[in-house]
Image 1 (tube, one colour):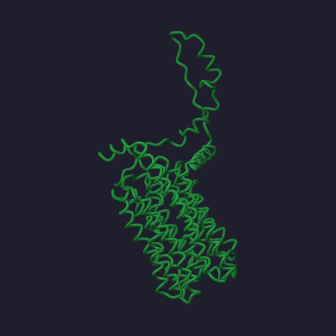
Image 2 (cartoon, rainbow, N blue to C red):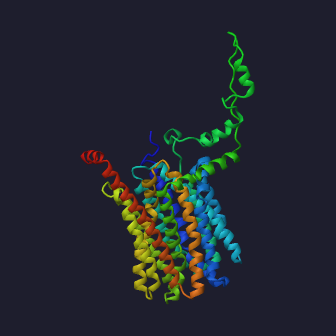
Image 3 (tube, rainbow, N blue to C red):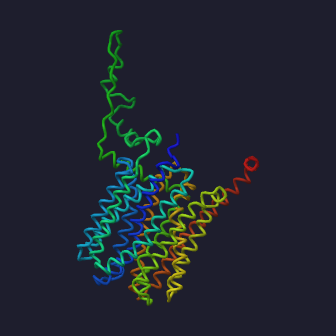
Length: 471
């Protein structure tokens, strides 16, 4: 039976992952408030201060493949709960930090790893429970980032005004602990429904366990015994079990399998991963530098944070509505092309921030940015499944998250360094828009090549095309 149930407890999984995105995604968007406060408090350069946000984002994504292996060993539920505890400790300790290096360690690395464990385990849980309604489920689940982006930046700014930055971090650490509750809801599918191999039964593990044997699968004493004549009253020989593999060795074997680097030999996946890297490097740092940019343009502290909340609200509407829309039979064949066009609009909205000088234009561009960025995240993994197939989607998600981690590690320090050199964020937004546009170009190349290849196949086999149209 198909492992995806498309309903039932799966909707509780969606609810849990929605709130997980609320916490992790909202905290990511609130980094713009953290960045501004740390910049004023520690008097460091913009590039070095933005580095902690790059570490937070990249460690969240780069821990994805490791989290995927841990989900095979311990199930998604335990991994998300462990991630919640790590994130809680990281945010809690950051409230006591007095140097930027300790902020890197706690609010950057520890919180990023904890959020990464929760993020990947949540995506894999939704992927296991849904097939036919996957676009809807992912749209609803990832819409939590939009809700969190609307609530948490404003909440963070309010808490800083009332309790100072360190008091705010104490309160946010308690909020992060709710990731443990979200993880408790990720009840795994029954093994009969999952229909997958257990980790210890994978091909690589069987090869390791059989390495102690001879070529015919028997030890030397067993081979000698097998050549002896067997009497009528002889007892049957018992075959020795293969040598057990240690849990540590099994983990690294599974980790290597999760890094199915042969997937990069698939040119479609390689181009798609490169596009995701560029787009992540472009759109992710916007939430970091936008509040400070707005304040430098004359907006108040609260109003500049409100821009992130407006983008988050539009992000929520985009993820929810487009998730339902792209599940319709008429739009599924065109989903990738519509998604590609949306990336052009994302690049344009990011670059437009550089030329805004008053509140009304800032709000309009924030609305456009929220709508298009919600399109990118909600359909990223659905389009991946359309390209490489559902069978390889689990490995593809891990590698794609890895590529996004590289992108988000580059974006914030680059934007901060450009600000240090030029004295404003104008060129920073232009550079981020250019990176997103580079991702759009990669997607256009992918679409054009696939279109030409499909047309060539139809011309070379017109009978199959006629039968397909008739059916």
